[in-house]
Length: 121
Image (cartoon, rainbow, N blue to C red; front, top):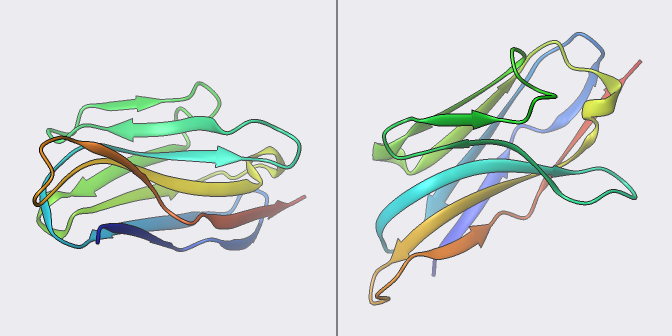
């Protein structure tokens, strides 16, 4: 059974940094795009950043220059380094990955359980 497990959330003051990690486990053939999304209270889930298998990246305008996404294909992991955090970055952050599981003939979209990031002013 494939699953994504996130870690690294927490409480930080404005201007501080956090690093989120997400690892995929289970019987996996391949992982295509991996990414991070977030959902603040009362708002829709939004894209934060994505990264392809060959490390092509895409960022939301609101985090460009402050957040950096990276991945380790050998570990089936994706990371999000968040610097210069602002109160408006407060949200539940979700890991997402396009995964081809063993014995399945296609890529399937998986989500992590979410990790809370709270930035105090």
